Image 1 (cartoon, rainbow, N blue to C red):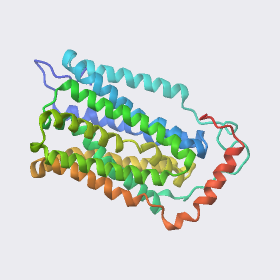
Image 2 (image 1 turned 90 degrees about the horizontal axis):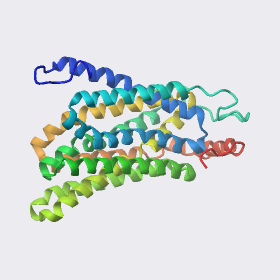
Image 3 (image 1 turned 30 degrees about the vertical axis):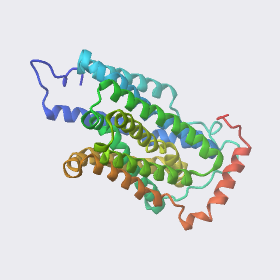
Length: 342
């Protein structure tokens, strides 16, 4: 892309070449999500996986935060050649560390090397497990409001709030840093308390409330003085963005646990398919929503998506009776192993 699709004063790359370049990079980058989650299920115990998966999930907000801070200024000062070149170097560094570190654990190093029998897979065919489909769909639904923040927060703050590049970049970076902190904390918290479904319902409810308040703030903005409105918009957007971005590690761990370690890659790949649907539909739908119902409707629609996800995270009755035995089995396995997270 650095060599072929950088615009200049004498050359504008064709839309087809640009689309193909982004398609290839998206396919290659998106394919690592399921396999890296499968690696975590192979390397860690039940009482450690939420924490480990949440650390993995900090990669997205970390990259987003660094990108929000660096890439706009880099593009303004040095053009898109510098942007694509920096991303190419970052990808090369990631490939090197993947080659160096990502190996299948041996039988002696795996989480079940004590001789204890591992918990069986919840379903030998995860794509026929209705609860896996439910959790994957809920993950996709919660990504709708998250994608709305990631893709249109800068447009909202600029067009509606009249803010400049510095404030916008700082706001988006704050959302990503907050999401990183919350993801790591939530993974450790739910590992200790074994309350992943409850935490996911709480995130859904708080996200719905935050986006609803943001929509109401936009609706009543003509009556609010500018010195109060601007920081209120930034604060509420940051709060909503953090709430709707803090659940990823917990949700993916719950999904992988339902599928079992041997089928975790399939289940996580299914969830990522729903996520990518959200990344496709939301940027396509928001311009139409803006024409019909303005920013108030956009943020209220985001609240509705988070609210719909809430009941999906309820524990199905068919699994409620099985959960205590699965949890006890996980505790029994852990007692024979050191806790690497301490």
